[in-house]
Length: 439
Image (cartoon, rainbow, N blue to C red; front, side, top):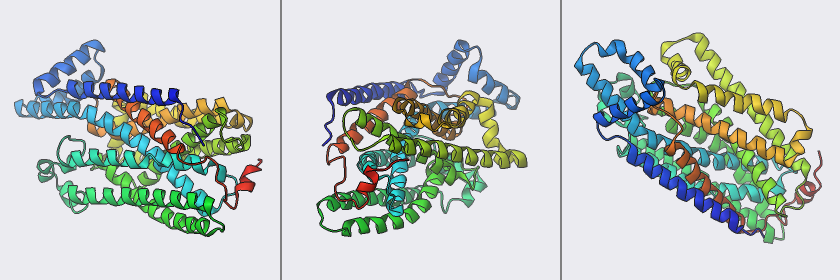
């Protein structure tokens, strides 16, 4: 039975405490008036030799000459962006750690449905990570609920005044409306959490059973769940991410978000497994298991790159204004996080995980995993921030606070869940195959 170390527990509490303080400071620092917003931009401009404020001034300079009415509109837009920043930082971090557990849930269901022989030794690790679905899902839902209550302006289609002057949003109102939006979110979360809880129950029951009834039930539920997951994950990506920019859409977006969460989830499985093994647990897990996890990290990173390029290339080549503006905004105002994300998520894994021998080196897998996770945090950052804060972005207290708070909560919840049951299944029909797995 795994014992939660005091050092790890204290570290998670410290991270949560610091993250909470940073987030509170971020929310308290957000401007409440146009004058405060303009003053903040002026300070930012002076401190960075122009920076984002100068770019904003250039992009709006010609329009500002149209008169005071436009000036007022631009100032209100600026205020909205700056007020959105702590909310967006909170949402990016909350969604990122939630999507890790959701990605692990998909991988777990695939292993169950495929009746894989190599992975049963890792099932308890996966079940521990997916335990975060409950707190993580509740937090994301609360943020969405507060958005629907107009506590922030991340989802512009939730503002009746905006919809009243936008024919495109009026045409989407049957789907994009706060009530239906929250109902869908509740269905998604309810289905994902139900499968996780029920599959975990069957998994533990199998250990005490004298036949394979629970194993067979788990196989059937997992196969059915994957159908539900594929539909709801795509709809979730449209609702929770793509709709922050409701004038833009991509038919590949659901797969793109899936690839990001899938590789992030597999990466965390590998990192938690290596950590537990270094502490004397999971004795039967060998280098071949780590190698296979790292192989998935490499393969899904290439798959993510394929989807990124397929989406980008078609939109950029077609050069349709309504579509290409998505990338123009990122090229102009998000050069470092946008291109840095490509290096971290494609170039780095390609170079370091190509060699089969490196996939068996535990510290190397951990190092690569940290880089990959940061790269996919930037991926979510690039999805949300341009539509919610425009060019008024930076990596500051709200962003760092969000990572610390949700990272600490994630570690605490996952490793607490790992203490609730033995780390090695007893009566899985493939446990011996997994124990002697060699690649």
